[in-house]
Image 1 (cartoon, rainbow, N blue to C red):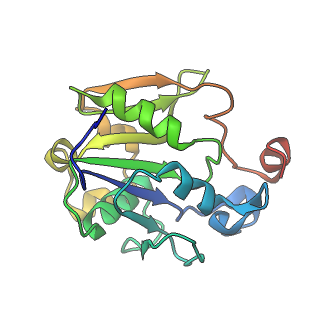
Image 2 (image 1 turned 90 degrees about the vertical axis):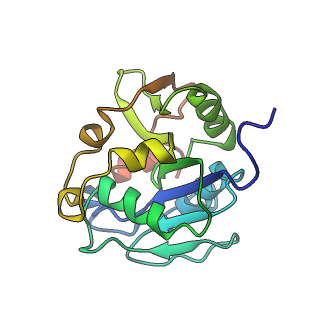
Length: 191
């Protein structure tokens, strides 16, 4: 089933966080199962025609990506997402967004999100605790319609940006909702 026309699905990987609980390490370059967290994120977005990685440090990838950084740096997920969307060369109908520290999100996860987004403004993965995760898809036109000005993006909470949108919630299966916020999280995932 073709969910969107060719060139219609693009991805943004958010890898610009401070990793404060991990002594400021570049999470994108951390290895799990012999691959970087960035490689896992790019695998999850394999169906995307184009992927932009928002990060202060470029990490080598097997797949061609565009690397950008929001201005000013470390502006949070909203600034990162919108900077990533602005850097896309293709004009997407649907944008996948994924935090680099969610290595158990797969291409199958992203396909489930795309299916759930049909007829809605988007869909996001929801953990067992009911919290929305930083793994989702958004209708690009609707995202543009709720976009704040440049000053309002910096430090804005993602839930505030997404509040006016009609989003499907997709329950995580297995350990899809696990993220790597600490070294103990990485150990629990087997890294």
